Image 1 (tube, rainbow, N blue to C red):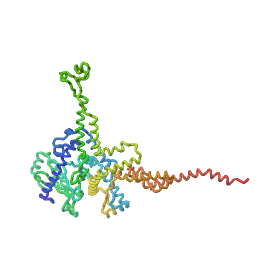
Image 2: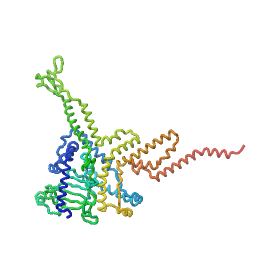
Image 3: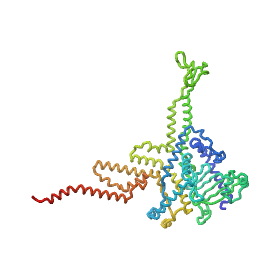
Amino acid sequence: MYYADEAIEALCKRADALKTKRSTFENQWVEVAERVLPGYARTFNGGLSTVRNSGGGEKNTELMFDATAALGLTKFAAAMESMLTPRNQKWHRLRASNRYLMKDHSVRAWFDDATDILFHYRQQAKANFQSQLHEIYVNLGAFGTGVLFTDALDEGGLRYKQIHLSEVVFDVNHQGVVDTVFRWFEMTARQILQKWPKPEQPLPDELAQAQRDNPDKLFKVLHMVMPRADFDPSRADAKGKKFASVYVLYAKDKTKLSEGGYTTFPYAISRYVAGPGELFGRSPAMLVLPNIKVLNDQTKTLLKQGHRTVDPVLLVHDDGIIDSFSLKPGALNAGGVSADGRLLVQPLPVGNIAVGKDMMDDNRVAINDAFLVTLFQILVETPQMTATEVIERVREKGALLSPTMGRQQTELLDPMIEREFDLLAAQGLLPPLPEALLEAEGEYKVEYDSPLSRAQRAEEAAGGLRMIDYAANIAANTQDPSILDHFNFDVMVPELAEIQGLPARWMATPEQVGEKRSGRQQGQEQQALIQALPGAAAMAKATVQPKQ
């Protein structure tokens, strides 16, 4: 028992204090959820227990009159996934930190195998990787913060779980890196007994009675993960883990259920944009929340005006005609006009619906811009662009996306990969380290090869193609093609193909390129010989003709 009762009580108070500070964000999350992600609307103030106890399924769209933001969020999550972690490709590679080690064939082969193993265990159905990561992107777009928990499966492998924001508070170290997490969640009395059949402290009477009489009664559990102050790497027990892991039954009396540890931080917490001095992030939906509210009100108003236009309010003179007035199709209403044909019943004038639609379109554009929808429509709306123009647009997109999406590589993917690597190594699922890598103590780095990374490198491709265009124009004007000798096309073409994401198997190897060139040269020599044969034969004939 490393954490005494007094320390547990102090940690619980710290968790409560952080939760109190989170309340201002909770209010914004509720406003966003009601208009953008209605399934989350009742899960913050009341917690997930409110939904579990009611069974869920309630209609939560009362404040949604326009679906632009909800659809924009769906497209945002899809764009984040396609640019950072596309399902149909390997979006990162593992490499040795020391680049000279990568010259060793055994080291390169080991990192290639390790990368393949990581993707293999991620893509297993029981790991639940893609669905949980998609939920992270949805949370980033709606609420600005995503929390991913990565752990080992009991039968071996990896498992992933997106943690609901209502359950989590966290803190950062002196460098601004998240290193402390407090998470509240609920378990039934039966589940608690299954997970902790021998708790470190005697269970309270309330839980013991529930296990006998009402095993499905819910109890709150607090999971605390934080750096261990008495960390000793020479020990094999919990003190030999860099991060402490403590489970506490969060009742009137705090009861410690178990204490262990992690060698790597199990939570990857990412923010979309973090405000000064704020722990939780801010989202695109929070940025344009005023536009979302206004658009919903405008839609509601336009619906009323449209109803009045289609089914107008009638203005009549107070002469009793309205009592017998019929609005049924084909009805005859006597007294609706005067004897000379002047209308005695007229519709109530309505507002200018066209102006209202223009105002709504302005808000829709702002919302779609915030969710990056407009940015990803660039290539779709102008399919007739040349290859150079496409690369220029991709370069612009990479420059615009880099600050926001690049943060996810640092805060979400880097910690997640470090955790995955540690879990697979602990389970013995990675191949033995080669000798050269053992001497380097296995230090590695992550190289991203996602569409975002290639878009960021599009500046190189765009610059190279621009320079070739300039040189080609100079060559055409001067009739001197030697200026193109400055370009090493044998290097440029393979790297341009890599930047554009062309599969390596589609490209010829250097040996195949050499064979093609050799065959082409032989063909040219043969063709020149064939063309020269008639002249050579004529010269030979003239040489051997007898003198007259």
